[in-house]
Image 1: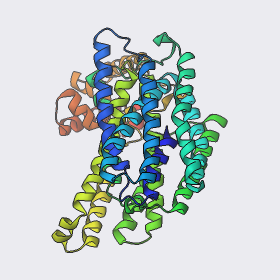
Image 2: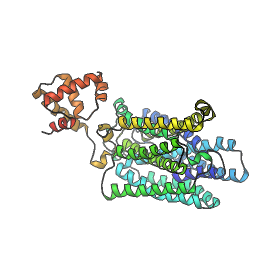
Image 3: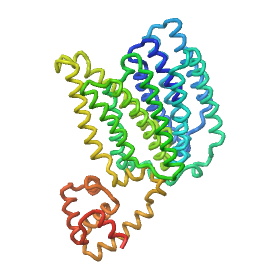
Image 4: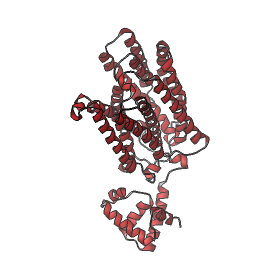
Length: 460
């Protein structure tokens, strides 16, 4: 699927089409995934299995035929010279729908695997797919077209094989439910979602070589080589050495490349380096978001298609809106506002850097238990409700011996769970200053000075 969409976007760029079709594909994909999300939730409400989505074999076949038709249409457009507007209206819409459906169908299998097997499958797919993308960069057009025509069929055959080996009982395929279909789940993941989608939105404002109608072959091959190297490192780290992945730390790599691209773009230098950074950012976001959604789905009773439709649809939509915003702000109208393209580009990039920094500080706290839950299976498991109950019981014992008031006990429980003061204020419907006051009283009565000491108190 991923190699096919790469070929689909690459061919028009080689033909000299400005901007390429990928921007519109993201917009269409967001709409298609939103519809898939609504459809999946509707099926669940009408008595369907909430944990699994049905195997829509007829729709799979229809989408495969449509993808093959898109491939043939791309080839015909280059040979016959179909007008770009007519080509984009039909072919890009079909491609966006096919990709949304295909990703959602494959994602439901990843939701069954668990994080370790998801890591194995995802990064093995990059080890295979990235060299194939490099081959498409250098192969003659006719060879690439024939290969692209076979890719949807290969994907369908693999999907049928995966369906045949998939467990039918949902309780045999999923992990412990720690993300139930509830408002509390939405609240716990809100900051993580804010971080991810802010990165996707701001990523869209940085021009890459794709925006100018022809990408640099050297940049493309270098970015695919980085994908391969990163995949090898992750596989050795997780599968070979049995180590864990740290979600905030991985997003700091995304921040590093994205902030570097923004800084270089603001200075108006090193266009090739900017483009390479943005290629890497795009790949890292796809990898990390896919893994995070798969891990959440594995521990949720929400239908995988519904969860993926919301998460990946939001990613596609924010990426699309970012590009639209860049095309609007950094346009002729924008030039008139600040008297020069370089000026408004610099201002926009600096503002984006500031926004990225704010998001990293407030949305990806390493100690936040909601963040720590992601990829927790790689560290030996997540904090269970029983463990939370044990923490609450210990807090009550300490509160009784130290003379805590009921409200101080409420704050103590949440502090012991690692909750932030902002979260505690919202949870207890009090101001953050009031939380600070109760926290000071708790620290004083327990004879501790830091949250680490407070949590260590529970183990005594």
